[in-house]
Length: 545
Image 1 (spheres, rainbow, N blue to C red):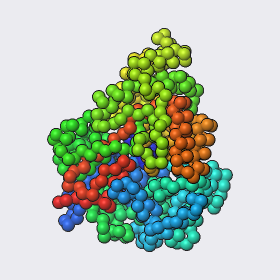
Image 2: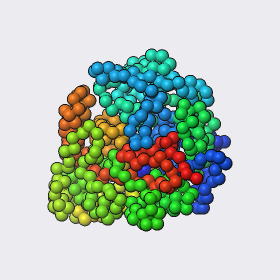
Image 3: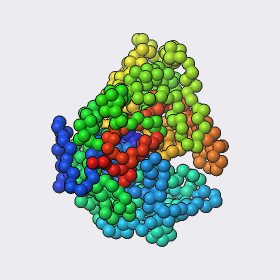
Image 4: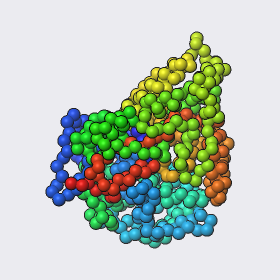
């Protein structure tokens, strides 16, 4: 899923509209001194630093991992994340698949929305039609193209009734796919496949996500949202497994200042924070041993080149020169220093169902050789000391992305490129990326599900807004389509490798490094299991007194 500041998402970048009622949501501003709030007697409370302020809690409109961290506690889909991040049954207790892999039948448990209404198969069908409705403007609609006629419905070429999602009865959901997808149980963990309460949305419209209106089927209920301060949720007594949920209340805080957040965890004001500065790892291990939890991730940090508008970035020679000139070894060993690995592919090592042999053709050359080639390529493209290439790097105003942008800026200066760094708030930056209002953007992509398609599908011509650089290649699209129809996993992996190689030869983006998950977790928190997808559902957690 994608994204995340410094990009989730996931699980993903949100819309700018925040439909919050003034009566329910207050703006308190950032507080310079915050103490741990009192926990009601006899209850277990979790104080959770969550990186960025969410812009929506609507599962079909959200995009950021920081939003998904909260949404996945309020609503659950057919499957959910087990403690180790693998898919485990949630609303679906079991399912069967047809021999051709195209028809999946899910059997739903008896469950209630938090207002007491039953959760039915119709709520899933409604949700899938809603995310594909062009009026919803979901950035993740393309994930639901896996359902038969999904793309046609999204483009207005087919009726919603034609979608491959049917409620056979209140407790039986049948999904018909465009092509076999053995990874579907991974995909149904994603918020784009969550059910939504039709009876509430039809009553309140977009305001259904406001505190006081929000209805979910997850382990927690939304209580309040104070912008700049916190989002509070409490245990949902109607959740089917409420008896096994330990934590009674969670406060989610935006924590863009990672050093401040680290200190708040050290003081005991926060139990968890979802990130820390890479270069602080050694310090934390010394002053608060056992708190820092770095772990290999299914995620890649990369630069997106905007090829949507005519300009120098449409020239493959320019894109290659810019990518070759980046000193990935310096960035990972001197700047990030938390175990990040230089990346010369987009799909991270260890991704399931893949043959990891693709790579940038020049990756084996020394950095000095690459700098010479980069200068030569720029000269071929018409740039020189008297006519330098001038670019703008648009980045989020987080410490890690700013450090990365400044390192890239210095590397490009060494080959005669004049780059300026423009920083924006995360939500503003990703709004610009979606609208193609940038030249070079700094991104992170976190796997929505454990399969190479979650990375490679991002650069398909028809993906939409999340194909930020607007990369287009008929050959690439054809290979991904061929892989979709290939039932043999080994042959499919080879086709996907060819697709990635095609994109890398086109310099469709510039991979920088493979990301390391960087959580800070108080040892009092139990049930936390480090995992590559970095999903840690609160229903599995507890806090020692």
